[in-house]
Length: 464
Image 1 (spheres, rainbow, N blue to C red):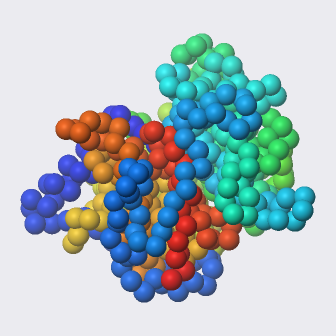
Image 2 (cartoon, rainbow, N blue to C red):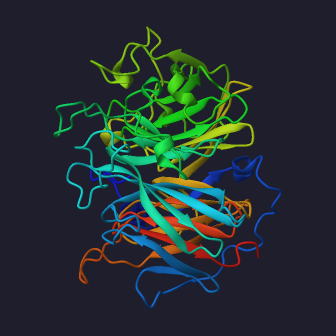
């Protein structure tokens, strides 16, 4: 998620466009993003109202909404295993039942820790992949009132756990956004893998890399619930840029441990398109999408995106991040493209839709010049579908940081604003948001502040 090398911040883009009398906006058909979701109607207003400054200096929300801090970095884990780790990132919520039949929620939360992490994920026997890895996941169990019952390590010894995604069988796939091999940065094992995490009993899944799913700078995944195919994004923000992948499992029926059985990793080729940044018009559609076997998924000698995919090459894109399944299609996000970094063209963010049945790829949303400087115009990061029929977008840039909502009508509003100043009074800074997700009943939005690592539960009139 967090990349110190971003060459242009959202605030700089907003300042430039405002000076020119322009602005920032979404372009495209938002309705397509919500195909297959619950039959909620579009929100009938532009927002829930203005954000109210939080007297506690943590999270600004509209009137009628409230938050609860579930966990903060540096606190003691309730399991007694150590401290709550730093750099809260991707996250998902899972339904669970207690032995008495009461509803519960399990949260699985990534920690995007590098070797320099302030607070690493504690190593736990049976759950640690590489003792020198500082990343991993923690798991929180909440009761029916949203109070934290337990908090524990779910996997440790991994590296730069950025995002991931839930599986239809109720586990979390956590992704390492690195390609470091054993002997690099002190690591004793190769990194750049996906790991499966059981939110209710992490020892059932352990710390086993899903090697057939590839070793590269993983960002996020989405699972086709009918076919069992797993789609994967690669967050390569410097050239050569990342690829969009699919994994064809040998056991497509799924289930805990099924992805260990192996399968085929393939990369997407869009005929005639070497770089997705060259496509600028929403609605642009490409048919007969091809999938090419990855020559060496383990990238023993050469990173996957640099491998030989034949004379016709392969399709790249800068900063492929969010990935989710909706209806009968998979959606994925390119956060931005900068020609200064080597992209063929510039954009402030794209959302693509791939229809497996039709083998069709469509550019659904473009972020960029428009009509309102308050819109989230650059670098969409974590996104999720809201139960009220909208979209939540985590902002990742400099300056004030927000969670923005987008209604089915395409109306954009600020849902939350970070109030924890990690800079100084003279030069304030705020940590990005990440891991936005909703409880299974749709009544609570969970979201992380990356720095300082804080997990919030937000409740209020979501269905008004």
